[in-house]
Length: 281
Length: 291
Image 1 (cartoon, rainbow over the protein chains, first blue to last red):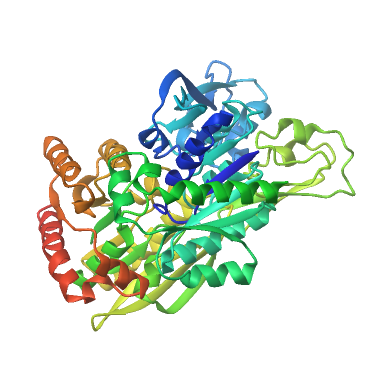
Image 2: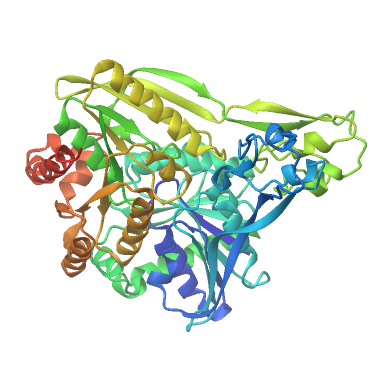
């Protein structure tokens, strides 16, 4: 079973929930995938031992000027304006390239080969308590994160009983790439106007994907506020509520085990796991 | 016109609360929200007269099942797994490259404009002044967030030139990817709002690395500093070592959370005003000292 832990707004507690679920499920050797490749933080708050690192590339065109006749077909067909034909050369703008491969396929002279362009690394670690951590880390300055997220999701035991994906914030392509093939999506939100606004966007995304979804309200105080109304209106279950705790915030800031800072957190997340299992079937 | 861009790397450090406060304190400025994934600045600034425009940057493939001869070429060549075994185009996966339409032997695939979202031009009444506010909403699942950021930025900058505004204050996206990189274009100074947590520090280093690559100067604000005062000290030292000025520390504040919960700009409240004003003054002085 693969569970994506996502949110529209950043900083609502995705990594807290994903790493604590992983700690609780340790005896089942879970795989935790940190798909927030722009800012991967799971490894900062869960002890792990790095075992292997490998680079991830995406293909980008390289024009062989010995064979190129400057016919312009590549630039004409590229929808991303990643190729520009000048009087004596073809310029490639790697940042704009989406690695679709069309230019190389249509070149009548076979003058375009694709070369590997490094976009990041995957770090594979073992968790001393049991399980694996797979971290995708985007190279700073790189624009295209979805291909790296894809590789991160393909790494680590695919048939593990539990796979957890710590997703990037937002609702656009990196977030979609992280959650699209999961069995269930936990949306972590907070009972604020920002949390509620961004939750609605996330729910639109999980609905488009036809993905079973439940909500955890983090930093919960007296009531569910606007988040409760959205959950009722859209018939999405609020799985559990994590109470506001300054003690937890302080301990988490130091990178300590949240299950010790807030002892009731274990019980709350065990109930989340039970509910997700029931819903996934 | 100068542009002050508020970033954080990590989400949830307080970018939007501080951006709204800076807009209030600056007075004569234009406000802009580049977080097109999850635009929250309007929640605090309450825009009036919002004029929405469709934003369409990309294309999507449309397949005519009646013409399709089931040759499978499009599916084999699509690198985004956007064509199903039954030849349904999965719009969420389609990047709009047009490879499928180009190779289809019977021209069963056409490329169509795809509306990815909307951008808005509006005004906000803040402290007795009318401030132009630009923001956008990308549809869930869409890409081209960088292009939408560029669109919002261009509109805001045009308004700034026409109206003779001295300052553009913009709220950035979390992370260091496509929308953030797009928001750096022509920015004069980036305010990095961080928090003294292990994650906050890690993400701060990555966003600063990006700013250095792109040649954008930065200034640090340590929010929620009392979460971990020792880590806040370490951050200040790190900033000093990297020649990044520190505009100050702000405590983890119940009042700030309450103001935001009520949809109000934090600095309207007296205690928050007294906390945030000195931070703003340092940022302003740094910005004014730049060419």
